[in-house]
Length: 105
Image (cartoon, rainbow, N blue to C red):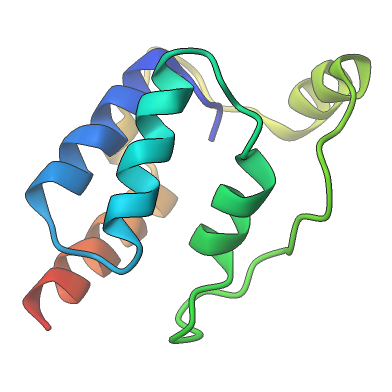
């Protein structure tokens, strides 16, 4: 997913609604992102993709990419359309299910 202001706002809203692991850290960092500070992106990525309960194991990040590399990565990786509601993406639905399951524990 691309990081957009709307997605940052949605993440902040979800973190305010659900008690999930690393909630305080993630909430504080999303507020930083909202203010344009993405310096902690590697740690946030790894908290989300390498949780201690091993529920998700995507790829571990080791560093930030350069702006030129970022644009190329976006163009090669993302195929989503802004006219399709985010809720219709299977990945989004899976994340929602995991958040809800964690909040019930």
